Image (cartoon, rainbow, N blue to C red):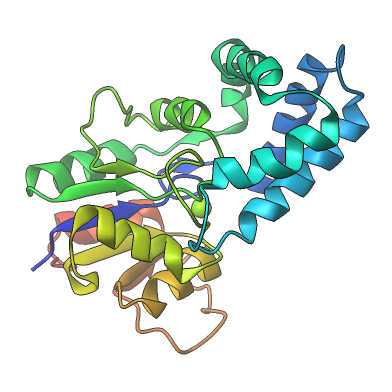
Length: 241
Ligand SMILES: [Mg+2]
């Protein structure tokens, strides 16, 4: 019996290509901090901190702690000095990036439907970001965190692994106290959303064009299609969960 649905955010609930968004985000963030740290240097250190977080496999600290350990000494400022600036950036500048994303009209009915079924709903976005910019993107997607009572929103503050490791999904199962076959993962990234969730036994729906061939043939998908197609399949009863 299904008890929890895990939704990826970027390019699943919200149209948001990371190839477009991340460079613009880093550009805006580093411009905001340029009076303290040269932009090129800050971009390099943000990327180094991100790579360190990607390696976090669930055996130790939170992703935030891993990032902080690498990042703050490298840029030569205390966390207590830079963090309030980051927060101001996320509050006042980050919202200007919304135009790079596309709201998907099926996201809200899909999330509402999952709640109506009594399932627990998890925002299973790769926890490389703080909670605040994730909350912004949920609002842009039309499914804000202050309106929907998500069981868990995975962010860099509360997770001990990234989607590059099965431990990410293990941590979600543990927090929700559910078994893998009581969950469904919905996401667009083959490795992060499909392979890693399947490796711990969570069934997965792949958000991809139906003509797109899965990169590997070792996963039995619940289904494959765009978010609109997933919603259509649910509404017409083609897909019963
Ligand atoms: Mg995604």
